[in-house]
Structure formats: structure tokens, C-alpha cells
Amino acid sequence: MKSITTYILVICSLLASVACGGAVHAVAEPQLRVGAERVEEYVEALRGERVAVLANHTSMVGERHLVDMLCEEGIDLRGIFAPEHGFRGGADAGEHVASSVDEKTGVPIWSLYDGNTHRPSDAIMRQFDVLVVDMQDVGLRFYTYYISMLRMMDACADYGVDVIVLDRPNPNGMYVAGPILDMKYKSGVGALPIPVVHGLTMGEIALMAIGEGWVKECTLQIVKCEGYTHQTRYDLPIAPSPNLPSQHAIYLYPSTCLFEGTICSLGRGTDMPFEVYGHPDYRGSEFSFTPRSRAGAKNPPLKDMKCWGVDVRGVDDEQIIQRGFNLEYVIDAYNKVGQGEKFFNRMFELLVGVDYVREMIMAGKSAEEIESMWQAEIEEYSELRRRYLLYAE
Image (cartoon, rainbow, N blue to C red; front, side, top):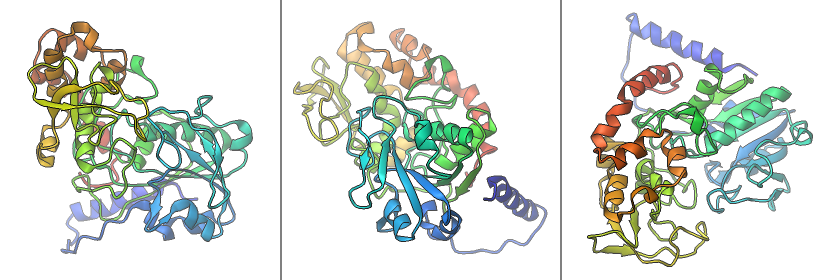
């Protein structure tokens, strides 16, 4: 299997040719194709190999699921690793999901969220030679699909298993923002010293993690997206997890997810998760909502309690993107709920990644004052990021 380094060198060579005066011809932009749809780039390499996939409900190849397509192609598929929310994508955040068998194909499903271990057993790792990774990420440090990929890359390095990442666009890949994770807060919702909004695809994260020594080096191939740049507005065809049902929620997610680290509700248990926030004690609002138990949010925070707060469904997508990672929502709720330090819990530091944000909010600092704290490190990170980009900025 060819090393990804080979492909990068070819790309760099072509770019250098253009920079030195090579002819540039106007061409129509190619139609966007995700890595999984570029079947010709990886299926033949899988023939004769024992294969496993790290996949979920978003792993579609056109109208077919990746697992179905590989089985129809006669690939020796030994197992399916399932990330957070399970293989079918319906489990709650962090919910334990038992291992099982895919009813359609009979392929074993090995859960990475069974409550026992996030790393497969030796017996399982010896059952396959190639791991194919295909999941739709949303570009946030605390979104866990990339963490499952990194853990599997480490395991594959130990067992000499090759890794193929079928890349997909990052719907929040057009900017980087937020503090770099202080590694004393490394957790299941933050694994690398990267900002909240990291601006990388899954393939680029894999490259960076190996290049910076954050994971063990494995044989890695990335099947790139076609027709994608980091400024492409990519509307996800399938909700990546139960509580991100819309593109608007995905754009708000970097900012409103911080409410997971507070006493407030961010709309889990409603039709508008991550698009509202509130609390029974929020003052001065005429907007209210009541979280209820439902699929994907069986026991939401403040369940069955009427919450007053703010509806941000009307904020324009481009306005959200231009503003980026926005602390104003949390600061507003902190001031309007009036609980002081009780407003926060330990999850807040795990999500935001540093300790000074809580301290500065409690000291009455503005969002702009707090955000200025990480601008220098964002500039350094942006230079690091450029080394691993597979797509134009």
C-alpha cells in the first residue's frame, strides 16, 4: 500500500511547477465527491485483505452504506468498529452501546463505547489487516469521532495494521478559533493540543497526529475528497449525531456546546438542540422551552422543567461563521441566571480546554477581552495546520 507521503510529494511538485511559471488554465470546478465515493481509489487495494471498518450511519457511498458496498464487492469484512452514538447513530451522547451483529450483513459490530474499553482486545486486533475509517466529523475538538480514530490508529500501529481514511468535508472547516487545549484537561472530549474549532478534516487530523508524534506512526493512506476546499459550504446530507439535526445547529455548535459545562439547557430534549439555551431562573426573557425525554436525549438536563432563555435559530449562518467561536451566549446566561460559581461544572474546562475562561467570565470580562487571550497561540497553530492541509484554504 502506498504511503500518503507519496501523494503529498506529487501534489507539492505540481504546486511548485505552477509557482515557477507553469501554465494555468481555467477549468470548471469538479463536483464534490467525498473520499468514500472514490471507490476506484481503495476497493482494489482491499481485495485479498482482512478488513475492518470504523464507521457509523454517515458512512454512505452514494445510496449505499460503506459496509453494504464492501460486502457486495466481495471484500473480506471481518468487523465494524462503532464510535460514540453507535453504528446506527441513535444512542445518547456518551451512552454505553453493546457490541452486536449487523442484521443485514451478519458482520460483527465491535462497540468502542461499551463502557469497558475504548481500545479493542488483542483477539479482535488480530482478526484484520486493514482498517478503513469513514465517519462524518463536524470539526470541533470536543466532537469525539476523531478521538475514536486516533485510538484505533494507535492500536493499528501496535499490530502492523494499515489504515485508510476515507475523507469527508469539515462543515466548520473555514476558520480556526478558541483556546488550545491545556493537556491537563485531556479527556474523552478533547485529545489533542488543538483549538476548539480546529479547521481540519479527519484525514488532516490523522496526518497532524502522526506528524506531531501525538499518536504512534502507522501506515496511513488518505482518500481525499474531490472538489473541496476549506471554504466550501458543505451541507451534511445526514445528521452526524442525534442532537445535531440541522446545518444551523452544526454552525452554532462550537459556541453553544459550552452549555454542557453549565447548569443551563442547550435544548437537548427539544426540536432545537444547540439552537436555544436557557434555565428556569433565566431573567428577562419571554422565550421558553421545556426539555422532554426523547430518542437521542433520554434524560436531558432540566428535563420537564420550563426554561426561559434565548432562541438563536434566527441568527444567519454567515453571521455565525464570521463571528466564529462566540462566548457571548455563555456570558449572557451567566449574568442572567445569577448563580455565581454554581453556574459552571467541571465539564466546562474539559470543553473549553483552559481554566482562565471561567475565571474571566466570573470577573466580568467581555467576550472580546477573553478571546484576545488565545489570539497569539491561534496564529502559531495556524502555521502548524498549514503543514498538514490536503485542501486549499
